[in-house]
Amino acid sequence: MTSLLDGVMERRARRLVDEVGAWLPADGPVLDLGSGTGHLSARLARELGIEVVPADVTDMHVVGPRPVLIADGELPFEEDAFSAALLLFVLAYPDRPARVLAEAARVTRGPVILVQTVHAGRLGYAWLRVREFFWTTVAFHVSKLLGYVSRDARFTMRTRRFYTDARLRHELDAAGLRIRSRCERAVLPGRALVVTGWRLERDV
Ligand SMILES: C[S@@+](CC[C@H](N)C(=O)[O-])C[C@H]1O[C@@H](n2cnc3c(N)ncnc32)[C@H](O)[C@@H]1O
Image (cartoon, rainbow, N blue to C red; front, side, top):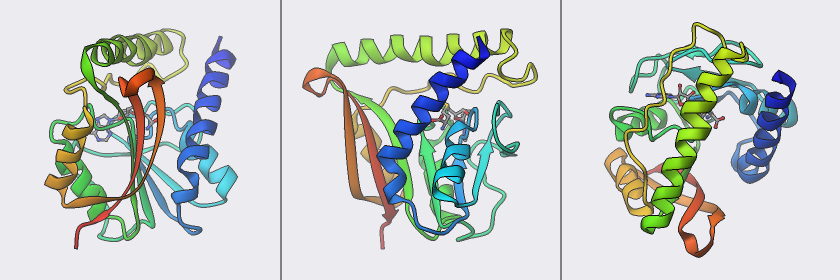
């Protein structure tokens, strides 16, 4: 069963690297903020040959090094310590997402790369809620029961908000960031549900 889960997580990480890997600088260290199981950090380090530092509010890593444990909205790193920062499917959970983005920008001298699922309309919203419940809440507790993630891992993914494109942009404005490039993957037709990837820079 755990090898099945590993297969799913590896496939997911491969797709994410294909989507945003080209935005990463050739040199590290890169911060993977909200690193989860660690599959993405490990794959990036392996495929791109760069140092990737995972950081999270709990330790649920399955592969790679233990994450640096952080508090919500505070990063224990110097300014410009990283060549890039990744925030993949993280912003629905922090208390103050704009603060998390601003902290990521503070410790990063290069791009902040954000990937988030955004909805438009009722169908997209309903689908996202159901997806979030199964792929986050249920998946976490099942993984813990199976011993795939550590039994000490805390549940840190209570969804506080479901983003629309406009709401996500609002967080960027509040954090003083702007979009330099974007990519998209449709989950539902008609832009009802989209996985959106943004390469962000500080607004100067
Ligand atoms: C859905 S998982 C995504 C994991 C990984 N980024 C990926 O895409 O595979 C969300 C992650 O965000 C983390 N998280 C929750 N609140 C956070 C916060 N305030 N700061 C940083 N990470 C947080 C969770 O612990 C979890 O690891």
